[in-house]
Length: 488
Image (cartoon, rainbow, N blue to C red):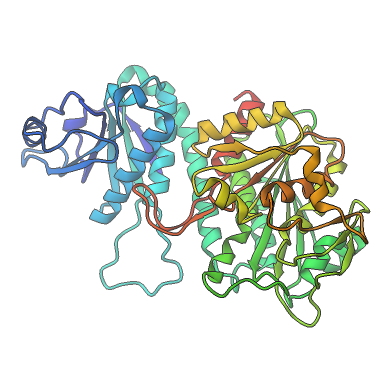
């Protein structure tokens, strides 16, 4: 999707659709139909409220769409992003390939021109997305949303252009991730994920290392191999390296289970098709590297992705089995559906070779986080209070909010094993915390934060500014974190 910053007056711009973001009690747009709707009380500018009118025959916009962002004192980056997403969804439903966007002064709140441009483009990418790749094309298909024109004052143009650059990069990473999340398990295999990483490396000049099954075995990743052994698809271990600055790198780790049946501890059949989304941590890391390749911030970043399927077969790992991890600790398998932590523990151990400044992992790890936090917040746990605060702050800027859960020593008792150093499941109690405590067992000598995105990686229904399906959660958060670390 292309973007453009323009200084044209909103009501004079020639466009199929002019979307105007407004607030409750706003000063109305100087257009007769809009003024009548506001004067009559038919439109108040409440959050998510829209009004579509047709333009004048004299010229300008063919249609004008007002989108409410909420009350003037409550405007945030997230509310503006959401309003733009609603506008983009409406533009797509109308069949327009491009639209223009104006934000009233009240709807900007305290945001600068760069922030407005950035989050508007992010919102347009969010709301305009549709996945048609695997469908037979309808006779009268709705066209893809191709462009957004953001209308600003002359004084704001330079600042808005800076925000547009960041917004364009994040939108590209977001769309890359969302499309990859949607690919079914018979398309997006571990080998396919590795090829996507290789193509990113070629396009942007990253370093890339991809370990095949034999190399994974040689590396001593027994936990990853244990999960992979039930599938005919071979596992892959992917390492991407972006060198943009000096100093120790930030390491991003993403869970890459391309399809999760639960293994021998098989999941219920209902909604199992959604387990193609169990690769969402991995796709978020790849999307973040798409952003890095476009923005080139002054920071070093490593991306690690253990990729595998988790399937039942005669060769599959069984409850009661014991495997040896990359770190050397032995693990008793209690539940083969607690496989994400097994592949991540080997990746966290592998991360030591980079002597990282910080490590952040993202994983659809536990159903328990959905019970705890629903679909609005990421569960966040870690071993470093400063890093936890930094990640949480990045999540607020990104509109991908995180909520901390404790990692008290008492929870370690949930993972005590009679036959091994640790077991991979502590039962139903404190499931999200137990999963993170397991990972902490393999974090050696670096600040670390775990993001449980099981409740936020995909949505089971439509939202006001969001289609059903994948959310690309993590791409914006990772980007905000890395840009601030880089001083950008």
